[in-house]
Length: 197
Image (cartoon, rainbow, N blue to C red; front, side, top):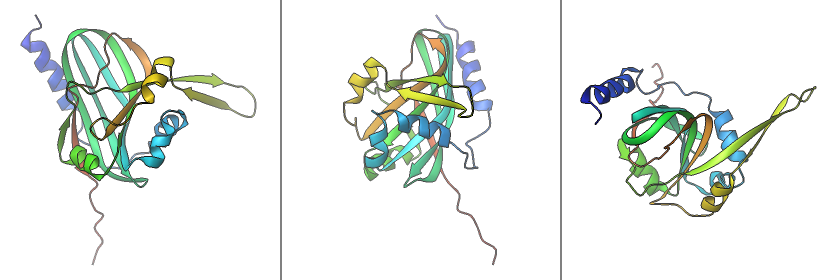
């Protein structure tokens, strides 16, 4: 059995980091990686908006924790910031870093996510897509070719689940478990810029 001391330590590590970002960051590289995946790209044109995390760190040995900060977009503009926190107990070992994107089918789904505290239920599922980088030397620099794995292709043909569609993209590490069920998200709107009188 996992001691309460370990669970408390993991929660404190997640809570001790800086709060939700207040400055808009450049997530264009992560967005472009998702946009290049054939099964993901069409959602950018049809969804009401999306939330993207450039990096989520997950680690655990019996008790796992994941955390990351993301940005929420509508019509190409950042509308707010979201922090993901997930603590789980069960069969898991290792560490992993990945990117994640959540598409909102309509305004209702966006409002549900941005109401303040959102949590995925036990039936929530994400489609894992894989990226393989092929580097070419010379004047062209390096290029990354992004595509979905075979399993990802099959699952990506599905539709929204409760108005949401989630994709993940591993960026390193190995882990026996990677699930979004139980993930919790906070949301904070972009503060309006005040102008002097």
